[in-house]
Image (cartoon, rainbow, N blue to C red; front, side, top):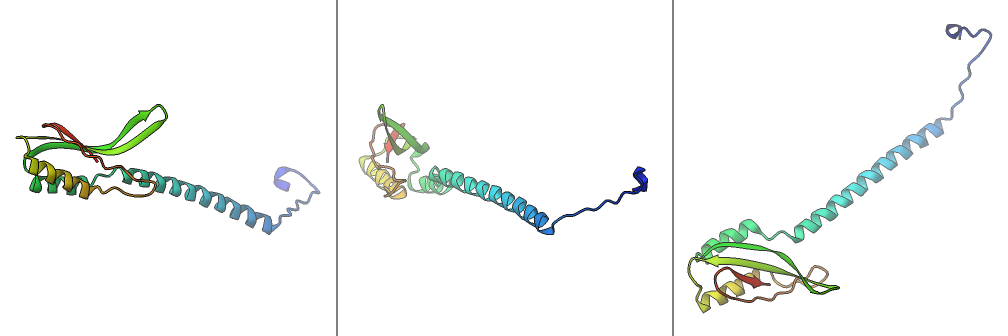
Length: 141
């Protein structure tokens, strides 16, 4: 205390080691809780993204082999607004061909697409509804 020019004074520090330990443990637990919440958020977002994964690489290679007439396509989950308060989701496959597909090829493509994206049951089900037309056709699944 001579450094601070305080004469005839004793400095007594009383501290409970349990308070320090519990304070440190509380801080660690809060940090762990924050990390766990972030992990749960990341997992939930990854699960949502997985619903929109359309097996792009596998689908592309199979399409090239099985349906060489199809020169380009697009696939994705679509929202159809049925009424003001009703929303239906389905998988849409839009494609164009170098030449019109025969009826047999159309049926083959429909059946193959249905097998690639079977209708699921439960909370993540997407209806299978396929319709055909001319090139630049939409197949709803």
